[in-house]
Image (cartoon, rainbow over all chains, first blue to last red; front, side, top):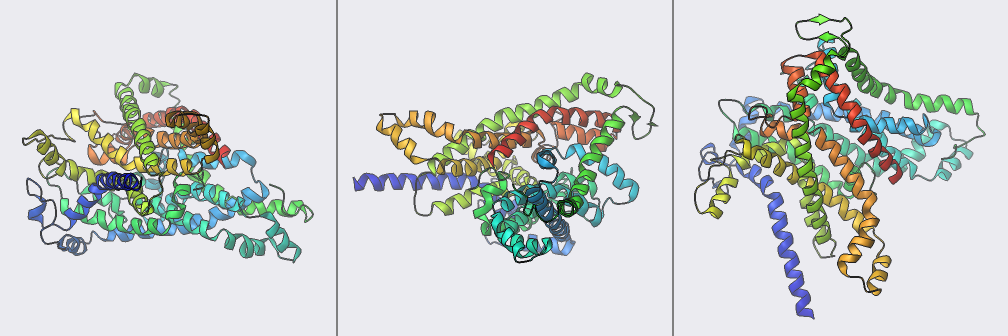
Length: 274
Length: 297
């Protein structure tokens, strides 16, 4: 019986290991390519690992200034997330406690999340071109705020619904104003959900491609657009592609590792509490 | 949800509630409703890069759209990708979730590792697979070569026969973990007593799965499917990075086609009509998705 159990365990771990290797191999390959020398990258048959890992490809990104695109992504995703969290949390509180707009407003907000970006990006491009907002931080931050808001409101609505109303009522009886209730009771109690929502909203903006592709030219390129531009007609910069992708992906890994507990809820739009 | 303090003057609360919601709603309306209204208006005009004829054009653009073979093909391409990728993601995700239902030490670590593809930017995912699929310097052809016993040089993103498999492999790789994670959470929440009762009644493992477990997780499965199908119908990033819609226009999806017509040919009115049709068509699916999500909470 014990023997059978341990054979079962060994089989389980063997299968699990195989699955994990298959799924992580492309990620490994990207990291491996980023650490190879240019000569190694263009070897056929390919080198399975960098003989002597080196950071030259990353240094080239700094030398050529491509690394600015990471900074642009950070500024745009970061600022829009902060604004969307502030406005979105207030809106969510209003929807939950006062049923503002009833059910229809809540559903309209969610529909904004699920519509295809291609449906909105063309008119916005034309307007931005006319008022000079293309290729500016302001233009992208505004659009990304609008893009993050439905997600923030929908998620925060769920977290705020879980706060017992009795706590707010108790604060009222103690003479707190509406704003004070919000600051002293609601925000602290929604704390961890607030952070998790902010992190995922940030990641969605950080990873976004289509809006950035359309609305940036040279000044505020985000890293996904920069990566796509390396795939040129005449030469393909494998070294830069892999190195910049690694730089853009590592922050996401770290963020998700810290907030893994909230991930199921975050990606299922609150349908699964996890 | 009851009002927090019905006795504190309703009108004052009303103002407070609206003030809290207004800024966010305004921004969303500006960026969500305006483009839609704009699209509706221009779809009845004749706007292009060179012509700015704002006269009423009737349904001319809609007629053009439906007579346009490329639009039909783009629809077909998009549905083809979704029709293959979605069942694969669901099936593989379910298999993984059932595998990980067993409690083992280090399970959490493996789950955390398996989630990685889903949180990577789709653009980066596409780039990774471009590296993987490269005919000379990528590892995929090399591995196929080992199995085949001879050197192979499949032109994954360039050969029409392999462009679709490449796109689908990339999408399945990225989103199977999404399905897996949601299904694992759903399966873990299923009430064990019912399963045990069925087992006592002599039901087989397969019967228990089909008649007890599956119905219990069905609401969540359908939500996951709805989220994923809406994503797949607007697929852009992965295809853009792997094939740019090529070779020719053979992997052009709806989003890529709209992008090309809008940003390379500046056929404003045509894109307007396309967007209107797209939004109307998606609305039914969207409504179903919204209801489910609303019911789920």
